[in-house]
Image (cartoon, rainbow, N blue to C red; front, side, top):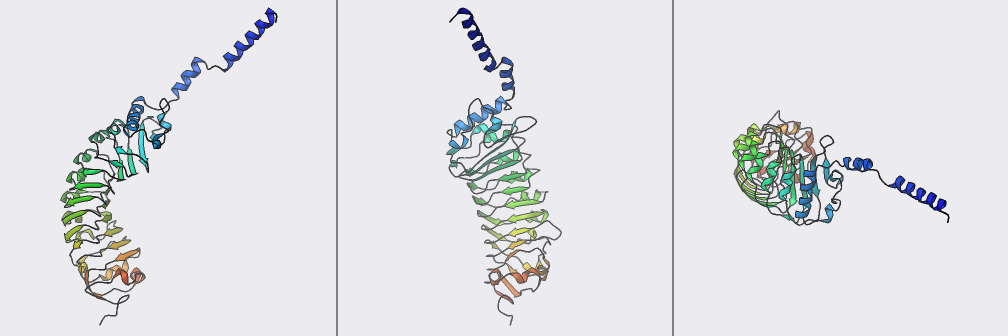
Length: 339
């Protein structure tokens, strides 16, 4: 091969290499497309390590954009992590303290993770923008920490289906924006805090399947409950205060307690969809006004001490004997005729 041909070939090879190699400016361009904040990236890598590098977080690869990782969301304006939702994962361990190092989080979820144990870390109080906290269907235990009341922007707190013990912190009532509170399906004891009557918003309250005892707070008469479920506890005494007209009440479940009050004297909200007061010691007659509940879809007053004739008409006629049986002297359709 002559020298001139070799020179031309060398020139062509060099030109091809320069064509396909990225320029310094293009490298800088690739780097600037990384949305992930370095502090958020560091916190997420610590969370992954603390959870034992589970397969569920396999997309959390070092030196990649954390805004594109599974179960993570970034705010489109700030590019900061604002949602972390880990659910239905085969993860063993505890909630990592590093979750508190994601200061822009508004949503934090650990749900359906049966091998998640331990307590709620205090570092969670650093999440001052948090509005939605769901730690449910896990095996978290210990007392419900009172420091959760420091999360002043919470509108939903869900700690259901866990192993929490002890009493309900009265400080939760100081959460100014709280609308939905799920503490059901735990091992909580003691009384419902009287301070829960301070909730000012239309409230969704779920405390069922615990070992709560004592009286329902009289202050509940001041709360507009959309849904209230206190079923399967050991609550005693009066519950008439949760019934009120001109409210937003859709669902009332007081079943399987030791409640005793005169049903004849309660008033029903016209929005009521579901009423379950079964398995208590409730007495009196069923008010005639129940026939005016045009939205009623479920009714169970069985296993009480009710008497008198079952009101006829409206949605009441849609319910069979199972809604009414095992009462002291209740009669009329769908039960036996009154004598």
